[in-house]
Image (tube, rainbow, N blue to C red):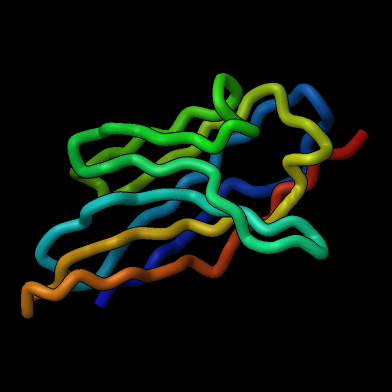
Length: 120
């Protein structure tokens, strides 16, 4: 079973930067993809970015060229560097990972979420 712990959320002014991190812990065979989703007030959760085990990346159009996802496999940690933040980036950001357990099953887990508020 895997647990995800996110950190790095907070209040930032428009145009500012923030870095989120998410660490996976627990017992597992492998961590596959790791990613970030977000949910703004009154809206559905949406995809933000994903990174595979071989570091291939994918981004939502709304964050492309502003956000960078990376991972440290030794630490089972994924990062989301967010630059040029806009008020529309305000949301609760959730970490997500797909992993393989010792029974060779693929499972998915979500973090609790970290709030990012972009406001002047």
